[in-house]
Image 1: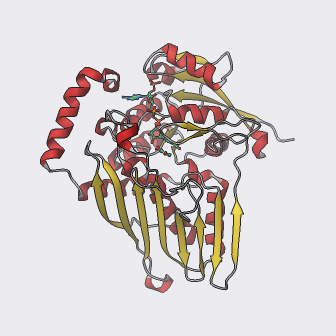
Image 2: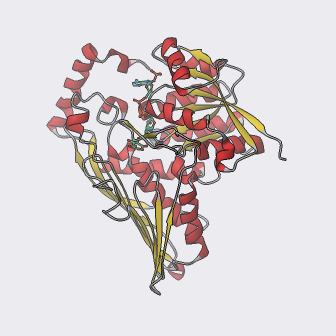
Image 3: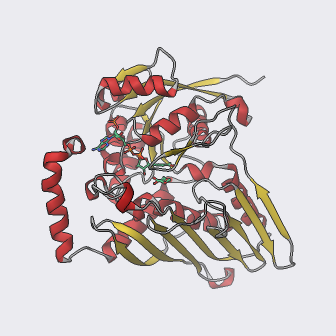
Length: 407
Ligand SMILES: NC(=O)C1=CN([C@@H]2O[C@H](COP(=O)(O)OP(=O)(O)OC[C@H]3O[C@@H](n4cnc5c(N)ncnc54)[C@H](OP(=O)(O)O)[C@@H]3O)[C@@H](O)[C@H]2O)C=CC1
Ligand SMILES: O=C1OC[C@@H](O)[C@H](O)[C@H]1O
C-alpha cells in the first residue's frame, strides 16, 4: 500500500474554471487509479469579497475548514498552502502568479500563463530564484488521450511527422452571448480574443506532436492571418508554423494552428465534422476528435489501410463535476471534467521535488507565448476603429464595469 501524500491547494479566483477545477480536485483520486496523492482545498480567495469566496466553498463542496479570503494577497500569505491555482482572466495571470511566487508559493497558472513572453520569463526567473514549482495549466497535455497521441507518434507507427493541423474553434456567437462586450472573451482589457484564449490549445498540439517526434524543438517561424471582432480583439486567427528540422531527418515540419470564436470545430456537437487535430506522417496519421482541449475519440489511420479507433472516458464517481465550456456549464453526468490529471501532475512534482510539469517544459511554454507575441506583432491594430473603439469602451466601462477595473 503506497503512502498517500496530502497536497494543500489555494484557489485564486472564483470564476467558471476555478469552480470546475476545484470540483475535479475534490473527486476521489482512486476513481482514476491514483493512490499516492490526496488533494485538499485549504483556502479560496475572491478579489470581489470574502462572501463570494465562502459561497464558492459551499457550492464546490469544499470541507468546512476551508479558509476564505476577500483578497488574493491574504491567500498568498497563508502559510498552510502548498500550491496556488491561479484562475483569474489571462490579463491578470502575471501579477497574480507573481504575487504568489513572491510569497513563496508554488503555482499552477491557467492558460495562457501570461499575455507575453517577457512576463513568463520573469515568472520563471522568480520561480527559479525561490526554488518554486511553476506550471502552465494546459490541462490537455495531461489527459490520457493526449499522452496516447504522443506515444503513437513516438512509436514510429505513423512514420516521420511532416505536418500537423490543429483547430480550436467554439462558435460562441459573441453578439448574442457577450453583447455588452464585457465578457473576458471579447473584452480587450481582459486580453480577450481567440488567439490568447483558444490559440494555446492549437499551438500546444503542434508543439506536442513535434516534440514527440524529436527530443528538442527549436522555435518555429510563424505567418498568420487575423480577423477582428467589433471590440477589436481577434475573433479568428490562423497561424502557419514552420518547425525547423535537418534535411537528413526529413526537413521542416509544418503546423497549421487555427482558433476561432465564430466558427466551430464540431458544428453539430457529434463529431460529424471530423478530427480537429491531425498529425500526419509518411506512414499514416493520428487524428483527435473534438473538442481539441478535451478529446473523447482518437483514430490512427495507416497507409496499409488499417484504422484503429479509441474512445476516451473521463472518470468520476456518479454525477461528475460538470463540463465547463468557458461560457456556460453543460451537463456531463457520470464524468469528471479531467482537470484532476494536471492537478495530479502538479502534486506529484511537489512530492518529487520537480520544478516544472513533465509534459510541457517551461522552455516550450516560452516558445509558445513567443508565437502569440509574433502574431500580434504581425497585426498591430493601427486602424481608426482600433483607436476609437477601445477608447469608447474604456469610457463606458468607467461607469458600468467598475469591478473589471480592480487589479
Ligand atoms: N482550462 C480550461 O479549460 C479553461 C481555462 N480558462 C482560463 O481560465 C481563466 C479564467 O477563465 P474563466 O474562469 O472562464 O473566467 P471568469 O470570468 O468566469 O472568472 C474569472 C475570475 O477571475 C477573478 N478576477 C480577478 N480580477 C478580475 C478582473 N479584473 N475582471 C474579472 N474577473 C477578475 C474573478 O474572481 P473573484 O471575483 O473571485 O476574484 C472572476 O470570477 C482564463 O485565463 C482562461 O483562459 C477558462 C476556461 C476553460
Ligand atoms: O480554455 C478554454 O477551453 C474551453 C473554451 O471554451 C474556453 O473559452 C477556454 O478558455
